[in-house]
Each structure stands twice: as structure tokens, then as C-alpha cells.
Length: 359
Image (cartoon, rainbow, N blue to C red; front, side, top):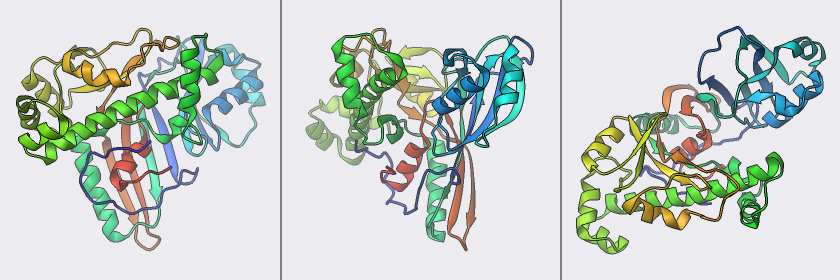
């Protein structure tokens, strides 16, 4: 799907390709491992291999069932990645003896009382090498990226979520609305893609509202949006770009409890301080819905017949951290490093900089 970009700078030209030589990701665990217990924790570096393939290889080497191998998040095949895997400690010898592929390197071994569960990570560090970057473009990227670190970016799902043809959400919708119980990880992934497609549509609409409010007078904005002038006046008074509505689910950032927005001053101050971020709906059987005006904006993107997944909420707005840059003028290569919270996509960050789809 097309994205509505939040920032107003002109497109910045660069060449992006997701390869093992140009795209690097490292998982940051949610907590430190105690270094004792019945589970072996492996810090693994892999290249040209998806997480699902990694699990398959480890299962074959150890004789374990795939369900007995723990991981926190999925990492792409076309990248060099570092992630944490857990297996029962008593299978350590089999793993070390039978793991022979050069695509996998065990960097560190620890132990824990608990196995790793999906979602148990703080975030990811990225390092990406962009090609064909002029000196002028390199300075523009630095300037915009620093602004985004301060002001934040929309937390769209990246193109990777939607399959090679970007249409997997259509299969997911069919499965979700069939009412049948999901079979295996593939069907769950397809329904999740449909969930994500609805969320992206909601975020697009909220970015569009925010841009209309930002670019126009109160009178013109009210006419374009068909909103009361009093509401547009309140929205325009908010200092941040992403406009908040009564009933928005404001969640403590980067994790924690939430509250429904009732006081614009409190919500705006929490948002500007990076303490809370509004969330969007991932519809499902137990998903928490927004309230009041925010619920009205959410309803178009809420499939109340999706029961096969529990549902959740996702930060609409995130703040990149730990920026670092290096530039090779002779080769016109620009390396950018940054950190994003879990579930966020590096390509979404780069697309906002370049103002183009990287698919």
C-alpha cells in the first residue's frame, strides 16, 4: 500500500538493497540472562537465513521439536542478523556436534531458568549501507534523521509483512473470515498480515488528518475534513505533528500501561516528552478498542469478525535512537545506524527519509 509520509522535506536520493552485505540487525534482549538454569541461551549470528530456517536447522541438529526452540522475533533472510535462541540445556552437546553450516555462528552461550518467548525483546539495532549517496544527500540524510530522532516517525508495518507480492493480507482476510481455527504458523502469519494491513490503513488516515490540519487554516481544514471548526482549532493548537483525539489509547513508551486520552494538555505533554504514544488497533477477539472520537476514526479499520487472533494495540508513533553515521565520499556509500523498539521496521524509517517505497 502507499504510505502518507509525515515529513515535508523533498525526497532524498539513495540506493537501497536488502542484502547480507548491506543490512545488519541485532536483537536487544528484554532482560539480562541470569546465566544459570535449565535452558541454554544462544546468541547466534546468521546470514542468508530466515528465523524459521534457523529453527529448522537447530531442530535437525538436536533432534528437538521446533516448538521446543524459543525465539523472541522473526529476522529476515536477506540480512546479517544476530538473535537469541533457547533450547533445553541437556541438548547442548548434540547442537555443538551437529551444527555445521557456515551460515550460523554461535557468538555467546548463556543459561536461564526460562526459555525465550515470542515478543521478549526490547528492540533492534540496525546498520544499513546505502549506495549512490552524494555528499549533499549524505548531509540531508543526517539532518532529517536527527529531526526524526527528536520528533519521531509513524510506525507503519514494512513491506516485508505482506509477502513477495504485497498481497498476502488478502489470503489472510479469507482465512480470518472463514471462522475456522488457524492451522500452523503460516496461516497465523497470513491473518496477521491482514491485521497489519488494517492498521496501516488506519495510520495512513491519521497521518492524512494531521497533514490537513498542519497545512491549512482552521476554516479550510474544517471544510476539507468535514469537522467542526472548534475541533480543528483544538487539533491545530497541539504542538506535535501527529494530532491526538479524545479517546486515543495512550500507552507508556516504550512499554507499559495505557490510559484513554481525556485531557489534551496531559496527552500532548506526555507525547512531546516521549513518555506516552498513541496506539492503533490490531483487531482480534480480545483487542482493546479506542473510545469516543478516536473510536469513530478506528471503526473503518476494525474487522469485528476477526476472532482467530486475540488482537492487540500497536504504537502509532515511535522515536529512533542511537543514531550514528559514516560516509565514504569516494565510493558514495553511506552507513546509518539506529535503534528501534521491537516490532518496528528499519525500512519504514528509511522510506520516510527517502520519500519512496523501498519494495
